[in-house]
Image (cartoon, one colour):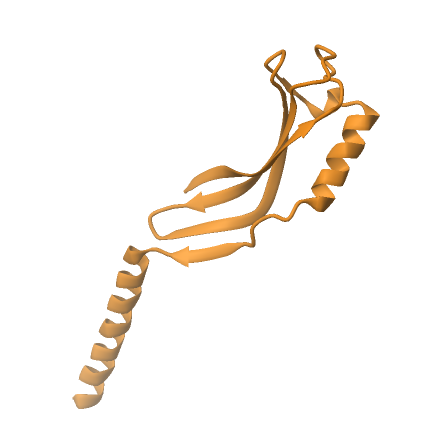
Length: 114
């Protein structure tokens, strides 16, 4: 099962970076989980976020956030509208499902004919 994340929304923040103290370049990214395997493709309700500073090129962990950054992230989390959860069967699943139904019908017809 291949789990990936795709970007839902990116925000440029005007807060100071806790690492380099630059007021520009702080970026907050929200991502949503995407699961794909041989039989189906699904988007889940699981979302995650990450903060990155483009000036000092470092990931900013939540333990380093200031109260201002934390309040901005909380606000953006509440305002975020992720994609709705979906579940789609792939072609192979539909073929196997159809084949199983045909076999069950054929067996029932064969049993009732004898």
